[in-house]
Image (cartoon, rainbow, N blue to C red):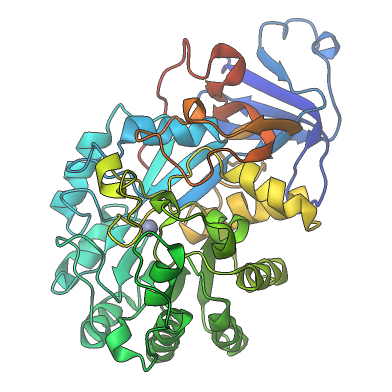
Length: 464
Ligand SMILES: [Zn+2]
């Protein structure tokens, strides 16, 4: 029996290591979902040898073909806070934005992913609901060190910890003493430890700025989370990593550009440290956030324009490795929209589905190439999550995950476009460039704009 073949051809395909797209024809074995051949020309169906006319075929024409994106920082919150987000809505939102793999954070679901039993609870909740592939980060909390190795054996991709209160009581932060215990446990494992890199202000010397106390002003919130909180946390992380140099460490959602010199020094000393930032830190700035709009609240906060420019520079230099969404929604009531209470609102920005357009819209003004975008959103995030060799590039032997994308089409961000559960986002009203036409997972369509998104399609995501 011959295996079922799918062919994707186009004039503008983003192959590995290329800044710009080129013609290519990619053959996929649908029984495995893997790429089995790549030729550097655009083909047409008539050119196939006779007898091969029944194979499935997509001609992307002049549209851009990218490897499926890997979003390594997403909070899906199910079970336990499924009214905030869930596997079904979250992965549909992801697929609509060209993402084919999300890596779920260990907190905000109940239970958190801190033991193998809890991981199984999450996997059971996710089963049959995922439109994209889903992988899981585990959690490091005080006292769960004996669960770490079993979690690695059970398939989690790494661990996240907090150096400051996480916002939910079932996921407490760790102290320096806790970290020694956990890092000792992890140091000889092939894994990665992710840090929410802010330490409490009581351990910093800075005084509160003299901004007003008006809770509806973004500046009031910003003054409570100064850059120093990130700088001190990152100093602690690099110091700890010196003691456990074989353990790969990663800083999630870097916002403070004043921490970049510490990161530069650590990397040049050869520490195995990587850093991510988020779409919101690259595309928004504090000066433009209107009064009374908690949609913009996240931790750490969005800072000013010069900070944003420094983050872009660091990204282009490779000091920041990758870009993720940190999609972290909640129910509308907790966002305190009616009161406009930024101080009292839950911190988290909803982004799933918009990231590629956001980064392209802002990035092209700054001269970034499509190759950069692929590097930051697919290749390096896939490496971060231990998925290199399988995800993140269009290469023989890799999963046939594709995005067919129109880089010139413009759209206005409106509520009706949101596929995530709670329809509020900091990006409403913005005009963005770049529209996903189709997303394919292992050679099969999981999102099709021309079919109203998901009509006639079904969730084909695996738990990785
Ligand atoms: Zn997060």
